[in-house]
Length: 238
Image 1 (cartoon, helix red, strand yellow):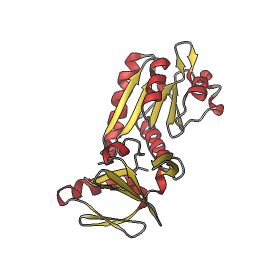
Image 2: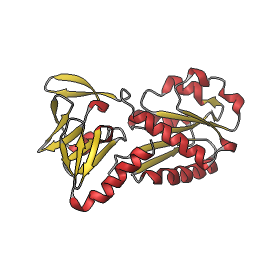
Image 3: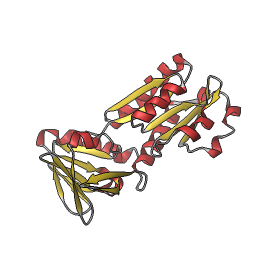
Image 4: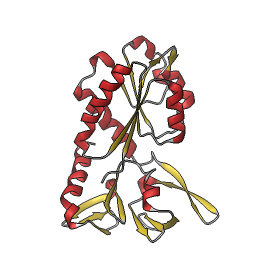
């Protein structure tokens, strides 16, 4: 399965929150993946959520109460990988947009199904780009910086996981379940012991994926059709 796409929506108009949540759910269904949508009607609750949880895609209304959320985002959104999609019914409120880090801009009365799909496609593509996902891992007393997009695949071995890169590998004390919580959406769980970076898949054949260093990753026979379908959906909707 895909790792979960984590979406947040913040809009002080609660009726629009419900409508947008439904529309986003419908648009994400095409990816045939798990997703999680959290809704907020104020910036304080959103800030708490962003501080304590990973957020892949954020739909943020520009006018929240008396605050301009574009200005607020510059100071308060620290997760650089979060893709911000600003929304507004009042384009004159978007005066600070050029100073912010955003993925897409939507004028709410003009929102169409195709526009929403385009916004999500761009956000997911940005998340998956090489260079967008740096993290640190601890091995012994040392901390190392790695780029998730350089990881070809991950294998669970007893109470450890092994990260495979093009020319080397790295063993970390963690469970596959815990480590996967922070992985970007281009990682696909293909086996109880393996997660693969779909950007490094070069081919697949019955019950195996082949990654860019030539390694073959097993896929259970019963799940092969579903998993390869998820992979092709990811490739076709980038």
